[in-house]
Image 1: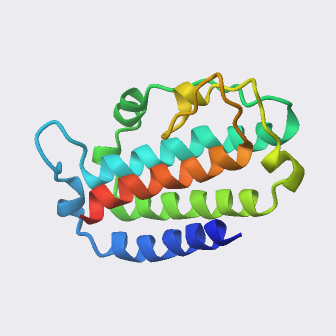
Image 2: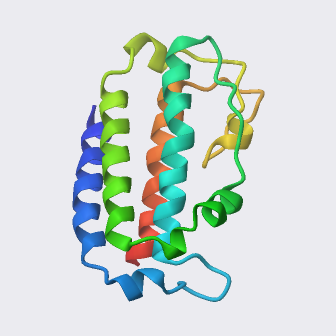
Length: 156
């Protein structure tokens, strides 16, 4: 699938670009009351950690009902601002390569099965109304869209 090839390419190309950012630059907030690059990558690590079980369980059960999480609380509690930049980049890269592997080997029938019972109106980046069915493939692509959105905040 083309979107999976694009996702892998994004992981590798972005990791290279992220490694070019200095420790001090990575720790500088983008603007007042905005996250720094460290905190954005930390948030993307948290997103990977929270979506990983969703992508597994989405293949093992018949619905897409998953809890949300306190994004700001996770970023604060993990103290990403005080973490070494290159360590964050390496963790982000490794976790997303694993998610790419998981997505690439997902059960094709499960990927496209419409689920009327879901929580994508709450947990998705681009939400789906509860009245409309959603698929596991949509949730995976939505994860990639979310990742690209935040990478754009760092690179633009």
